[in-house]
Image (cartoon, rainbow, N blue to C red):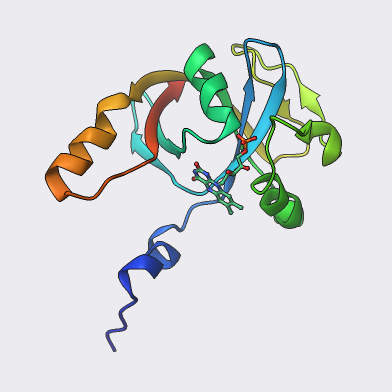
Length: 155
Ligand SMILES: Cc1cc2nc3c(=O)[nH]c(=O)nc-3n(C[C@H](O)[C@H](O)[C@H](O)COP(=O)(O)O)c2cc1C
């Protein structure tokens, strides 16, 4: 049987990885979390991950300014909090406090680990793909508001 989905629902079968939390610390020293489903492994060695982040997200500026983040994999029990974290802004909310999460100092980046998560990795920005949006728009005629950040594993 060959099922097909409308194109706008294709993410439901392609996006098999975990929804993650992106942890950042801005130049103003404020920590923040955002939820991200649009991410993908891009290379084994050195490990590269692409994360799609909208410039309207508060996290965007912190990641852009510092080039540092932690990608944290939450447990299933955090599902509700993960959705809620993705529906409020660090501009107005201290999300660690609001969702009862514990920031823990990371080894090689200023962004904190999330103690309640299953796994936390320190990442450094390799490429802030500024031209990505222009390329997609040029090749497809479809304007793309998001930005692709490519990050690599910090030692
Ligand atoms: C399940 C889920 C997945 C999400 N995935 C992304 C994503 O991949 N990229 C993105 O820019 N926003 C994504 N969002 C939206 C952001 O998490 C949301 O805009 C958040 O409020 C940003 O927080 P901030 O403004 O504090 O950075 C997602 C939200 C949810 C609930």
